[in-house]
Image (cartoon, rainbow over the protein chains, first blue to last red):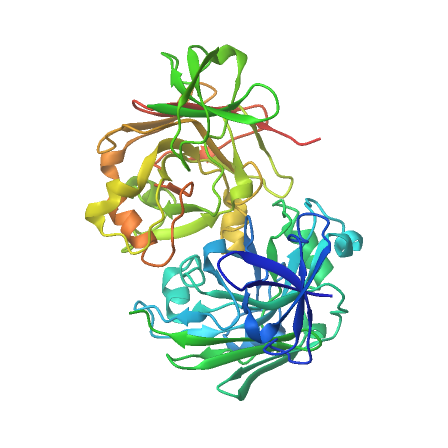
Length: 262
Length: 262
């Protein structure tokens, strides 16, 4: 199932997407009566055209976006870093989350804004000290994330809270896919149509059960929390006006444009 | 006003504290009909003895706990660090928050669990790009925080998300004080009754308006978000069974005990 969060007027709604378009610009969405992340839901019977709705971030984490750094060897190497011995964990605030086609605001404090395309895990059940073999039980589904990074501030600040935490620095979407075998999926990022990143989830240094076991060895994950799995090689700069699209095979495509705030 | 969040049975309640006890173990609490952080409230007319209630963390941030590192020169020096040129910002997840007298769980992954006593700001209004001169407008009040840190993991991990983000690593309390001149307050931490930290907020490298202006230059603060202002010199280790108390002059005392999870 592909579960979208969307608006037709002011109130966010939830629905099941049927589409052949990876961005969900055409096709239909069958309305659900509530948010399936938090309660049992039913179809309302109403169906809308995706062309008539605006897709939103499929989830706003109630607590946190947990990220894994340097989880592809080729990406660690391209920034001159060692492959970590344990997952390298950092946080993005939930206020950094935006949705498909939302603008990524180019901050005036940076001169090197970069994209990082990633597969993202959406947590469905509260969990702490999760054994690897039970990881599947707490995963509600998957979506796509852009771990937008001000690369210069990441280096100068030391701690990454600002460089990765600006408002709009965590686009998520276009939907949550609940049935997906993520063992070996292609993850690509294009900038203005040109392919920049091209990796496969089979290249993870730490696989998803290992990441979730590690994260929950120190913090409780709540339903709606999101875990980003790291980015493949090929990260690079974006400029105002650029269009950045991240595709995860079998899931869809998340597109955003870089804008300058008035 | 001193606004407490507390429980007498299962449901958290809110009320105005009247007490001469800095920890609120005696005195009274006059019940409010809702959480004054989010809506206008009225007294219900009911008053309870503080001895009959359990004080909870006065706020669970909806989004984030933002922290300032090395904001007292003597503390930066004791850990061998330079005084930063800009505020050093990191995040603690809202899942790390616990309340007065709650246990701080000693993780099995650390051998150096440390206390850091701090004045904490509770945000009352959504804000972004806040001018320094308007800082007062967005501050709902102040509380006390222990920025619990696994010092060994802080050094070995590089990013501080784990070392400062474990569940129970952000005790907050005992209440939110809404009327407090924080220009020059004494901040002390005692371990088993022995004074370990003794600083004054007048020693901040970056004052509160500067911190809030900096934080909101990249992220939106929401009502209920909490900003920790940094710790004075004298940080040190805690062991299971230890009792740690942080006192902010004119505000109160936050006490927690270090425990080992079964």
